[in-house]
Length: 505
Image 1: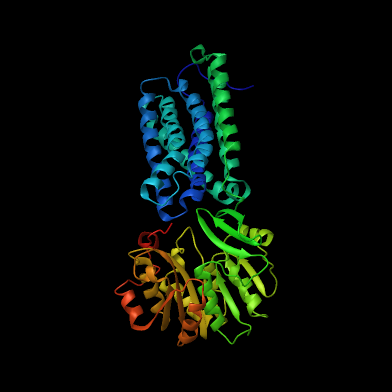
Image 2 (image 1 turned 180 degrees about the horizontal axis):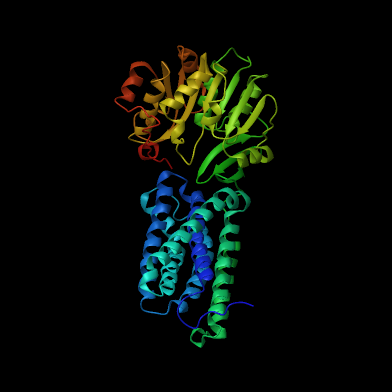
């Protein structure tokens, strides 16, 4: 036999705790999933993450304030169920809204980031955040229990937020697409709102609603969920870290382009692994061609896999070479195996995990070539840019080996200058390959750093660069020192990579 709700006053304690736990958890589910929802259009940078957190906290603050204000002026029991249903509808509408508007608002400017993140999280989180202060209002029967009631509900709400964060990050995102999580949450909120309304109205005629009103609520929720299902999906595959998509090059039937979040990431020719499409990967190829005698096998470590273009190139140009690839996203490894011609084995191993942690387990002097091509959005993850990381790279690289690193930056080139200073603080011989306009600070582009413990084969590199479709500059010696200037060395204690970086569209 169930307990009937009181006609007035407090909610049953168990219901109050469950309601507070659930809505606080729903807020954190929305906040976590929204990062993945906007990533295909804004990327996944520190600025985007900060905007999502800031907008979410702003919505929580406004929701709590408005919820408390209305709780003092109206019977909270009349508002709880409508708030849940409205939050469910707002959640259902968010997915198609972002996917239809995302292309129009695509970009990395502050205004675009703030606009799209606000559209994603503000309204549903505001509505949900209005619920806890109303529950507190209902449970405060007397002033002697204020601390106990507020403390318990606040603690339960925090526990709900922590639980939802962990479950979403470790379970939901790995098991379900973003669309499924959003639609599921929308339906759960809507159904919970209807169930709560039915429970509270028993024995309380003041909480009744007409059948057309309930039917309208259900219809709107179903319509929102339906729009979410039919909304365009920018991803072929949602991995634990990326919205990934593979497209065919219209100019070449065997060409495949890998898109990660908002960026075109890698190019692979299924029929010709020696074809290097992008400029920076061609510069990698030049360094790989001179690291040892032509055709000689080498040992290579790759920090970041992506499309696995370079490991396939080494296997084709230097038979017998051994490559180990550290790729943090296991979903990308699977995608590369299915659609990008990746074949792993003793000569090409893909290890899933953080590149810095995995590199620490490599033997001293075990690599002829270390390739740094790991990116989160358009920035190298900051912990892969520091002097401490370069010391690990130097330890693993043989004395005659070469380290190459891809960096993207634009004027005034703060990040590439700092990263060059950082690499040069560990490797005594450093050079830079980049387009002339980028070196002059007139445009943003890819920059490839080339470093070694012994003098670099600069004449060989310089002889190969003019043979490329677009000839870059080779900067070294005094000119490179002038380019670096007084740039700071990045360390584990100070590496503001996202703040230094100027994003290149």
